[in-house]
Length: 162
Image (cartoon, rainbow, N blue to C red; front, top):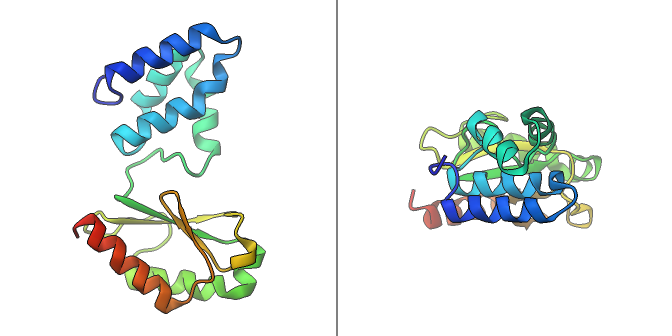
């Protein structure tokens, strides 16, 4: 269990779950904690969250598979979510997605050979006024062009040490 979540976080979630009426409210927070520590949420992470919060594993799994920012399989060090909403696609998002796939050498749902980037489509980033947009980690990038994407990727590679 300790490789999925540090003991202090385990204790924290147990204590918090014991004090609230609906521990289910903590599922997303606990899943994000596992993901932040472990890199993604394996089946053992779902079981751990269920045990910590006193809910059924299926209840945790339902939430884990609903949110596209919870990863149920290994991902790269940097996950790129490219918006595929109508606003982004109308503003050149399809061409941008093709550029990203070609530049990274991967398709949607795949990770680069060096393990740095995973590319995922997402239904909306809430950046319609800056379409096309993508999000890496918690940073949203808007008004993108192929050149801007190349600059962002180069910066992210430098920060990652790749």
